[in-house]
Image (cartoon, rainbow, N blue to C red; front, side, top):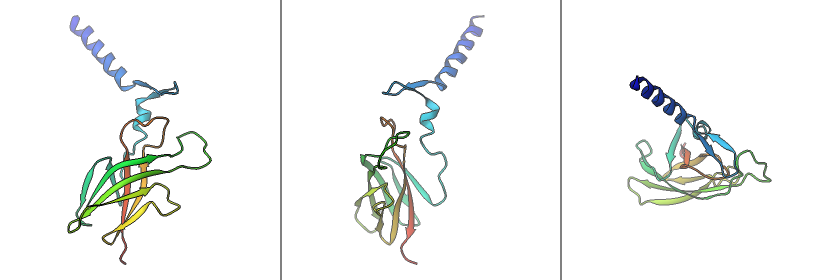
Length: 152
């Protein structure tokens, strides 16, 4: 009888953990599922996805790319109307097989052309920065990069 009560209690506790509520500084509640949905699940074709401080070697391009950090995140918070979209600045380090490391600062603003740079004949474009801006940032940043050849 004690085993049955123990297992029922164990099942109850584990079911409560998966639907845990998280309090925002504004006093509203968020489900843990809402936080997970702020991050992408699938990587689209032709996109390289990196977490903050992650390094990846791209064999076809013969280069290492490291997402160093988010320098500044002044994007308009989600679900708030702003006069401008705002901007986030990201530092990325790139190193070719036969080159020294070089750092670039890119913006998520696609209209002024600062969302890309050229390195070793490749154009590296910042496509997305996750998660979307919220009242407080919890978790790590993730970026999507697209790499195109500048030679046709």
